[in-house]
Length: 468
Image (cartoon, rainbow, N blue to C red; front, side, top):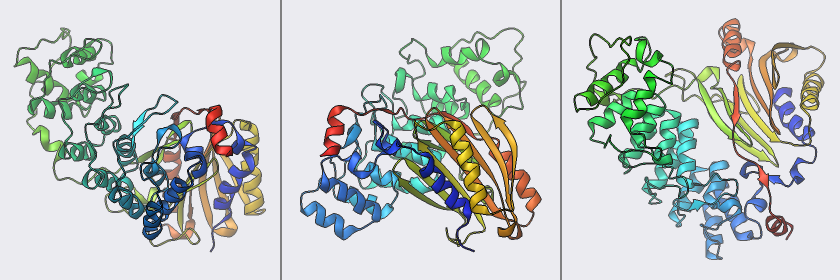
């Protein structure tokens, strides 16, 4: 069976609801086509497109003609940024071989200064295997600096691995030369940052490696003073509930520091564990299977979207059974996922995530267009049931009997960005359709929309360059 109405629905829906969003004066990196990202630089535009296609011969010809692999475009980004957003490992690798510098700081006008290293670490930590190879290439080929700090904030690449909780990326960066005794954003040490995300297993490991725990951040807080907050302002569950994963690691850190003369303000009614565990702290990096992420996170326009990993790829055996596709048309961002061995034109299981920045579209118009397109494309037998409704989102259970299709469709709005998440399956192709239905429903209820990129007005100079 060819690609069904649902896939067509989401692409056409976003195009149909976009109004004049493609001509809006508000642009984020994800909104931009190659002409807007590298205005007035035709060679850079062609080089970016050739790299995204993996066309090595064309890339070499363009460089011979004068194309600069480090050409700076809108918001200060360089050519490899385009390839990270339009993934092609072959093209990305060759850009680095041609001299692309991953250490250039992007001086964004929206305050989110970054670099190719920071950007790729975040993508690798959130999107997993797909971007890990890109990260490796930055250091193995591009001579990337693992300690590259953003000038204004001091943020280090390794902080993204901490914030997202990916120890494999943390370890990779350490092996690449990241120094764990450095201070990053707000002057906080890596140990303070790890404690801030309640990863005291990692804190203990860092202490055992000899990090300076007496260093203070920009607010005068040391690691001990930060940890003391767990006895006062923060919920006490971390220090009172043995069932919590980090409970034992926290108390082991307290014990380690007390033995070196540090003092904690522990209330009398806080009961310490009777016996401390002795599991080596470096077990966090032991040869164990990579984490299976039940959720993924992507920055799409104004949204940091957390959405479920496809139901068919949520255990150790199946976690690699996934093909990912990315497309962008104007302001439309489209991610598609299918199992290996299937195609976008012939699949039994499917998931897509789409987003569009459209300030001139109302939420009501978006919802109505979605439902109208669904009915018109899936013919008269479409069954659509509202299963959950929030102020800014809806979750629909959709059945299309004539195509043996069932799925759940999430429709949401965050500021001026509209999101859809859709997961579908052919009922005869899954072992237990009822179990699949319950699983996907539970996963889809966990979708979160949080602050993503700032979409800022284009300057007159930028608009003039694009017109040229």
